[in-house]
Image 1 (cartoon, one colour):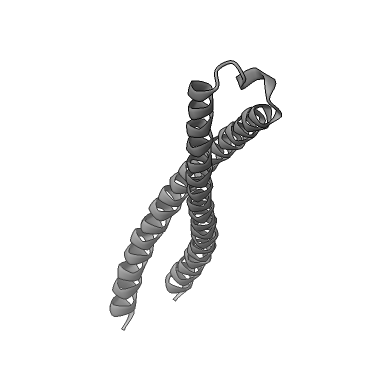
Image 2 (cartoon, rainbow, N blue to C red; image 1 turned 135 degrees about the vertical axis):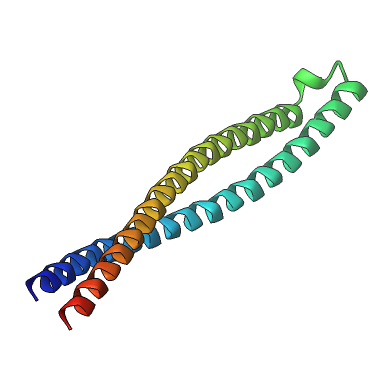
Length: 141
C-alpha cells in the first residue's frame, strides 16, 4: 500500500506541475493573440499612412512639374513638404513598433512550444505511473 501512496503522491505532484504549465501556456497564448491584434492594427495604420503619403507625393510631383520656379517660394508647398515629412516619420515609427511586435510574437511562439513539450512529457510520465499503479493494485488484490 505504501507503493501505491507514493505513486499517487507522485502523480499528484506531476498533475500540479501540469496545471501550472497549462496556466502558463494559457497566459502565453493570450499574450500572442494580443500581439497579433496589435500587428493587425499596425498594418492598418501603415496602409493608411502610405496612402496619404502617396497622395502627397503625387501632389508634390504635380506642383514641381507645373510651377518649378514657384516651388520653393510658396507656403503651401512648404506645408506639403512638412506634411510629407511628418507622414514619413509616422510610417517609420509604426514600422519600428511593428518589428518589435513581431519579435514579441516570436518569443511567445517559442514559449508555447516549450510549454507544449513539457505538457506532453508530463502526460507520458503520468501514463507510466498509471500503468505502474494498475500493476501494483492488481498484484496486491
